[in-house]
Structure formats: C-alpha cells, structure tokens
Length: 336
Image (cartoon, rainbow, N blue to C red; front, side, top):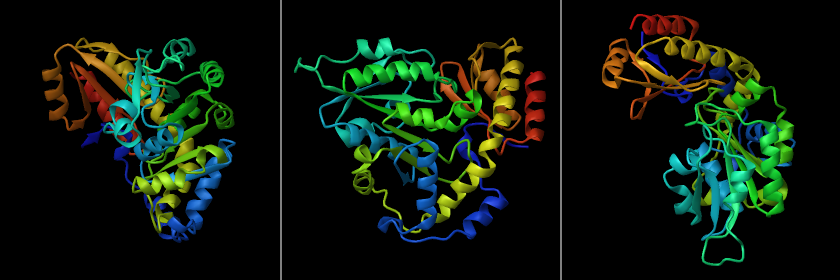
C-alpha cells in the first residue's frame, strides 16, 4: 500500500465531487458570466464578511495579485522568514511587483506586532525601501501548521493601521485553522485587507484559490489576474468542486488533525526522532538523527514524505489518507 503524505495537495476528486463537476452550470468567466464561479465567489466573500471575491487558478497567483494590489515597485513588504510568498512562489514578489521582502525571525512562522513595528522602515528615510505591506500566513506551512491567535492579528492590525500599511493573509490552509481554533471567519474579514483561501489543499478540490477583500482594494484584481495569465473560461466546473468541498470536506478536517496528532505521538516515542514540532492541524514536522536510514525505511514501506533538508522531514495528513492507511502508518513507525 502506497501512503502519500507529501502534501494535502495530492488528493483526487471523489466520485461525488466528480458528479458535482459534471453537473455544473458554466459560462465564460472572463466575461464574469460563469454562474458557478460567481456563486463560489459570493459565498466565500459572505463567509468572511467581505464585499467581493475573485477566483484564481492557484494560491501563488492569488497571493501575487494581492501583493501587486497593495504595493508599487521599489517598496517593501514584511513577512516571516518561513513565509510562502517569499520561499515558494518563485521569487514572484520581486518579479511581478518589483518589491523586496524584509524577513522576520518569528516563532514557527508567526510574527508579533512588536516585530512588525520594529521592522517598518522610516517613511522619510528615502535611502531604504518604503514599507507598505505586511503578509501573514495561517496556518504556517514551514512552521508546522501553527495557528495564530486572533488577538495577535488584532495587535498587528493596530500597527498596520497606525502606519497606513496594507495587511494580507495567505490563508492557503486557513480552513484548517478555523476548524482547529473555532474562530469566526467574519472576524478575519474585519482585520485583513485581503485574504486568499485555497480549495485544493485540505478541502481536496483539484484547483482554485479565492481572493477576498473590499471593493476599493479589489477594484483592479481582475486586471492583475489577466496580466498574470489567470483569465479562464468555463472554469465553473472547478468552482463546483470547491463548492462541494466546502459543504462536504470542510467539516471533516478535524479527522486530518486527529491523525496528525497521533502520528506526532508515535514519532515522539521513537529513539531516532530527536524533535517533533507541536502539532495543531494537519502538518507534522520532525527531526531524525540518522536521516538516511530512516528515509530508506520509509521508502521500503512505500511511505512518501517531504524531505526538508538537514534531517528534517514533513508529513501532511489529508482527505485521501484513510483510516486504513493511518493504522498501517502507525504500525510502520512502531516497528522501526
């Protein structure tokens, strides 16, 4: 049995999701005439209490569009050193927007209001880039699926308001954070200027990310999406998968979290494992003392994982990681 725990992006549509895709009513989304896309955008905008939303093919494109909406070339954004927008979007911050990144050494990918304030460049010191945006991530990917508290978000918001900075949330796994914390998505809409939420990770849709915000900041979003090559036609088929996932997969995310926590416990009991990051959602990051022997063992048992380098490995639970696979995985770990 192959057990693929590289990422929650490896999920495939269920038969019921495929039926929803086949039954979708579609139109030309470039003309904003796809009723299923329009429905998905309105639903997610309403969830977060935002005025408008726009469907993107990928999370990276949605984040890059948000950065473009908030900034001008030569400016600077603030983010954690682990941030996806800096590490995993192909240098898009500089390529697409001509913006530099000031990296903060946070805790498991999370930064504080004090750190934000300390890293804002003086606006009247023209030798340094003008700070105009703060990008946060929830849950944090390289931080092991950690979740911010709303209080921290509010404290950072007070700083960005004081200094007239934009505030964007990369919410690729925000659905996981909402389930783990019980937070209300409308509170996020009150704090952030823009939020991206991904449908192809924990929710298991084949593609799609929705960017939400209010009308003023989003007025040029469709133009930026076009410039980035994101104009799509009858993409309502994929939007239908997103709608299905919100109804049927979103409520099940707690199962992924439970299995991740059980994997963390099993790993912590292994002598070869030197450290396991705290697990709050569906990501398990851990260090091993003899990485070559452990990787060989996993490979021999058809376990697929992510190697983060320097003895650090990552496992991510997801919809296609079944109860049977989980029992097998736990047995493999216990037999090492």
